[in-house]
Image 1 (cartoon, helix red, strand yellow):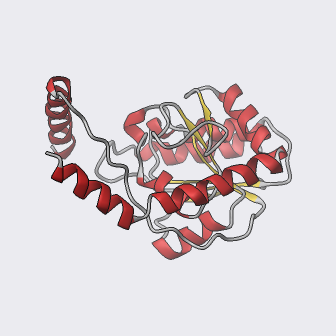
Image 2 (spheres, rainbow, N blue to C red; image 1 turned 90 degrees about the horizontal axis):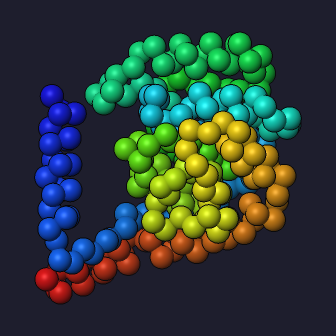
Length: 222
């Protein structure tokens, strides 16, 4: 019922946008965090379902040779698109591809503080989403920006994420391209450094004080 309600609201918003003469976009805000150290693992976190493309990430990771591990943190969303078989599918893939030593699958809810530690101390984060419905403008990407970490995302990327400047932006649902992006990010320390610096700068621009001011200006101009 809730999902049907959200779909109906989405249709109303889309119709309103088509008839709008002017649209103002105010980005999501964040609280910048102190950066951690660059660890030896790649991270995915978030709810698990077919639209998130986690199986593509595991398959792509299995195709590359590296010392780094892949950490996958997530649970099935109990409200939106419940998919109880997806967890078992991920586990089978890890076993079938002989990745048990390289992939750490953490199937549980991780509270904010330890999750922030995972983000702050990873090498980079990957969001291999298959569709914009899964999070083209998601809280997950905001959490990564807050820590100034590099990331790989699929198109359509969040508006403030520029390819090779704030993230490596790739085509969705393509294991070969995702595998190449993983290798690119792992091998290029200079790329990771550049993205980290840019994302720390971007995090400062997206702090809530500035977002509140932008929102106030929009209201004043109505």
